[in-house]
Length: 398
Image (cartoon, rainbow, N blue to C red; front, side):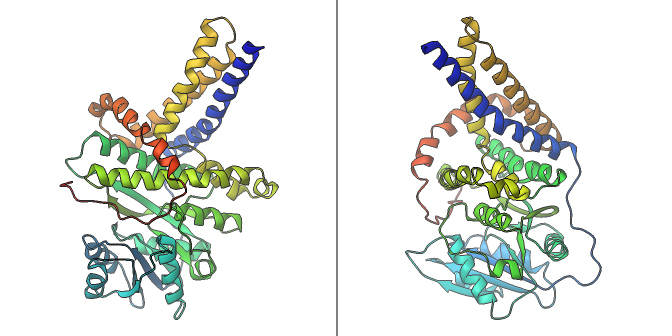
């Protein structure tokens, strides 16, 4: 009896790890071996754009961000900054740069979602054709604003740019692995979904929306992954976001350990908090009828890269024990297939896209990085109910 329970538990664990791994591998291979996703051809004028920049204590980056945006604006475009619960010079610097500035103070209703809601209500006084949302610590690559606006207008739906974060020039292994993981999640997998004819997750910055869609969106919330939730909500009602690889928006990882941990904590806690909602969505028959929404729900349930790798090891140990004891070989067979799929997908993605971010000589440091990362996950799970908008510390001296 105990032996049967052990076999069933090992089988269940190996299958639970195999399922997200298969989807992960499909996305990575489709994104590595396929083409690029760009704006469809459109005749006529580029639509009028309002660029909305939510900002919380971003005095160090806000001026450069606004100049990057202004260099791509056209006659009739608008630039609006929401200085949300700031106690620094963000608002005054934004005004000096020529942006319209909304100053918002609300110590209870904090978060990017509330800032975006305030900005959209302000834009409602003179609605644009398309709203592009850019975080206050990013810069636009050439042509990004035009490509986003054209694709949003041509498809009459939300569009996500290629939003990537880069390690500083003298960064260590932590940032090199983080850059590759970010590249994998925000470009390679989204490109894979696009090549498969599926929608994209909203990833936070460089998002474009036709006015009629954003106007009616439920933005006023304090979710830590408000962008992903917004994309899922829109897909559920028939406005699934699409990926535009031709529009690039970039940012830089923080130098400091404190900044990295704050950033990782916010992202992972938000994803863990969203997981319960996603699992319940899988049990809803309406989700199964909505191909675009189902694809994004499944994608959102794929664990972070480090956690997925750890789950493979966790499933392998009991499988090896059962096989070497002559009790059962099925769990080991499933775990082996899962690990091979994971390794092949990662290797192809790294070879095709990631060698610059994560050079070969850094590979030996990855196990130590994973161990340090995994130690933080229990804290992230405990923080899953929190929703404070905390600025990421980017000071290299800390």
